[in-house]
Every structure is written in structure tokens, then in C-alpha cells.
Length: 254
Image (cartoon, rainbow, N blue to C red):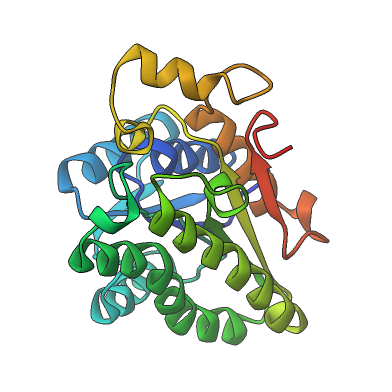
């Protein structure tokens, strides 16, 4: 029960890494706001958390994190539901299909940066004043990627968006440190999530094995790997950890 009494928001919590993070934080006692734009997925995850942890342990709130009005409503509704916020996991993210950089259109490029980067700005804009007013600090966790550390061909614009996440995480950590607000990033290698075929440029076993061969520990990441890392960064065990881009990658970035 490392997070007993804590309230956490997980964006993109309706599937993949976000689902696993939400469930892992709940297992350790946190009350969860599960956010997504996929109502079926978000509602399912919140219900499964309630079923496992007890009624009232999770609430699903729909919001497009790339829209200022939606983010404002998400933060306000979370406060209305639980009275305070302690942990924010900015996990929602999208990519383009692995392909030559000049084949990615402007509209697709803009959406990637809106969801992967602008959402963190909007989150900070509405959450940081709340954390400062509460006066207890807090933990902000941004889901970046190994792509932001070791970029690879075919994902140029996605790589750049995750590089931005890592850089702004460090800047936020430096600026918000005096408020006892810790800001860290998770950098997973590709994992078994709905985005995997887009990362690999296909869904065949050959695509998969070609990528696995680049990971020293010999496998892709799992949602559980990422969830356990998020739990550590959210917990008081990491109270002196801020500005870190934690590689959850089986050695991919070596």
C-alpha cells in the first residue's frame, strides 16, 4: 500500500501501458482517475479496478488531452471526485506508421505533437497551480520513449516528439523542484500495446524478431515492466528522484 491515500490521474489509461499503470497504482492503494478518449476501454479499466480494489477506487473521465478545455475539465472533475490530486501520469500518446519521414503529412505531424507534447504543457498549466495550492508537492510522470534517446529511421517525427518530452521533463523538474513537485519520464522500448504494429512498420513475426534482436535482454517491454517503473517514481521511495528519464528497455539504449 505504498500509495495509500494518494489520488492519481493516468491519461491514455484505457489500454496498453496506461491500463497497466492505472491498475498497478491502484493495487498500491491509490484512487484512480482513468482518462482516455476510448470510452469502452476507459470504462472497462475503471470497472476492473473497482472490482479488484473496492467500489470508488477508480473513475473514468473522457477528455482529449490535446485540448485546453478538456484538460481543464479533467483536472476540475478529478478534484470534485476525490478532493485532491497527488500523481499525474501523462501517458497518452500516438505515433505515425513507421515509414520515410517525407511521407508523413502535416496534419498527422501536428496531431502527434499535440498529443505527445502539447498535452504535457496543458497538464502543467492546469495541474501545477493545484499542487502548489495543496502545498504537499506531487509527482508528475511523463511517458517518453527510447525513441527520444536513440532515434531510428522511419519514426523521425515521433522520435522528435519524445525527445521533446525528455527535455521538457528535465526543465520542469528544475523549475518545480522548490515546490517539491517531482517530474520524471519513462522511456520504454516498444512493447505489446496497440501501437506496436505502427512502431515496427508491420505486424508480422519477421518485423517483431528484427526489432527484438536489437534488445540485449531479448524481448520487448511489457505493460507490467512500465507499470512497475511508474509505481516507483510515483511513490515516496523515489522522493529524491526528479528530472530522470528512466529507460525501461532491456538495454536497448546502451
